[in-house]
Amino acid sequence: MRTLEIPKGSVEHVTAVVTGEHLNAAGLDISVSATTYTWQAAEWDGAASTSSRKIRTTSPVTFSTAGTYRVYVRLTDSPEAPIVLAGQITVKE
Image 1 (cartoon, rainbow, N blue to C red):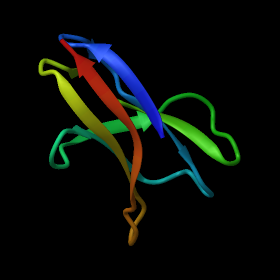
Image 2: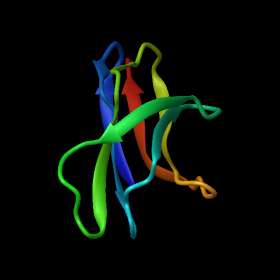
Image 3: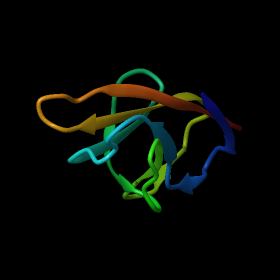
């Protein structure tokens, strides 16, 4: 699991790498949250490979509060919609 440390007040796109087979899900979402899922639209970032692919939020995320946030990815391809823990972000004062 990837861990990233950033300063409070940072505004940036959140990226994650997903590994698996058939990485062409119809819907992509990323959740960056300390407690519950808060889904944000995401898109593929870069070329496809056979076993892993990078995704990122379509809009930048503002990190205004210090703390630890978990990054989850949801790949939706009906009827399945698995949710995968992709990393962690620590926001420092």
